[in-house]
Image 1: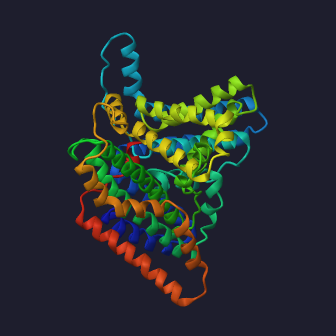
Image 2 (image 1 turned 45 degrees about the horizontal axis):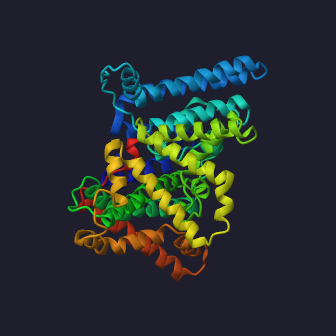
Length: 468
């Protein structure tokens, strides 16, 4: 089940809201746990026993760490048990075939293929549990005293599929207080509709174009057509992922929870350094706090600092998928970030803002080609096509046709990638003028109805981060 589905919008969510708000405060977490398991079982019921086992183990290990707070050695052992268990599950389900394939390949042998179905949300769930164990070990948060509270945290359905990565300290108080207000409900609904519009009206439409161009179904290739394709994917992955994050944050507000922001208009960035402060913020913060800083961060020799950056970005890429292209994607950004850190940012600061923005978007678009094509030969051919190698013409009639056909949605996507609309939304939410509020409510209702009409009429409704 995904948020942008008729089943979720008209059956699961309304029923859950009614039950959740009618339930006594003491039972709200139980309602959320049951709802999360129903939501999860809809797509992958076989992983639920493993999830239950891991949550119980994490809870017990955290309690033992709290009990032996004066014994650092014991605390470290319990922390490692919890971390290694979650990493073990992640590695087994996500990387077994990749690791076996490369291991057997070293000896010139064909690898046995083990059919392992990747559980939905295993990457995000594992990272959340790891962050909890480490935070309790460090003493930056206290352990949860009630198992069902911790189970509610680790199984929260709004973010279980694709984040944001929610740390326990973020929702610790919310799990007990359940601050349900009319304002939080209305703000949550508005945020959810914004995310739904991003996903259904923009991501799905440009994604359909990319699906045609990426497999060569669009017809005669040209440099223009290749760039139109990667521009479509650039918008698709942003509006798909940020739209899902908006829906998750909105749902959390509806149920009295507060999640951290995950995107901050990354396509307005003027350097790759700035881009990664704005893109997938919770993942970047996770690697910073649990990998980069423990390795020494930048408070070490230059050589070790370079090592730390390469390790973090190789792992960032590998986290997204069990394929070499994801590792190359991470290292691609590592090289650029190292260059910016040591000399390039000083040069960029002297360049007009417009050209810094062009520089950033150009490099980001190249990165999305690396990110998409798991087949390295297909990646090579697409990158060569983008730069006109192989006798490909600069433009042709078909490229111009797609440019004219999708020009309006590209302009709208570019506009919605900026914070201008957010200023309008903030104004409508804060104003005391009744007619502005009524007009705003009408707009949200209209967007929702258009999304529903699209979902009913269209069969194209992928969700990109199911792959990761």
